Image 1: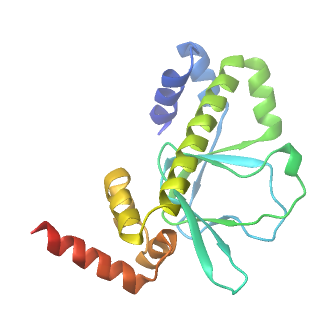
Image 2 (image 1 turned 90 degrees about the vertical axis):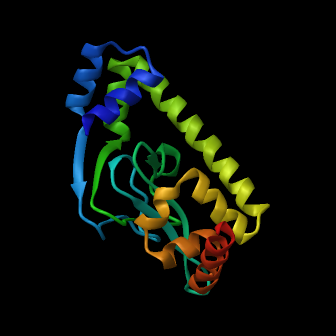
Length: 195
């Protein structure tokens, strides 16, 4: 598992192998079972972040009508930012729950600042990682708003095909902004048109 993180550090920084090893040894890596809540909507936001080494985490919120709305899935090599120092003490607008058994790197502001002081290139890596994540989320959001549910489904088929089999279909339908029945119709239509 730590190989994923070491590869990530090599791709985004000039940190030496010795420093990479020291950083990886000082990181907190926790295992979470499927169904484990990392954060609940309405609870005080923790100043934490996660990096997925293995597994899938669902982000969702309960809307005003009481309906669960899935807003994202985080899988291998993706960061899950929760909050920062400016929002400490605020209440979370969403929940995070493990959809699969997960292995996550767990970070907090205090340990992060200490690591940044000791390894300045680590801060560069985190910044680059967050810029990439933000860019991907903005592109995904723009694409989702300007596309039909079928186009959204096809986009996921192209970009994250493994997601379709990894998450419950009712959560996946919510992520696409449709009902499970509509998702079934879209899948049938696409399957029929392939032959």
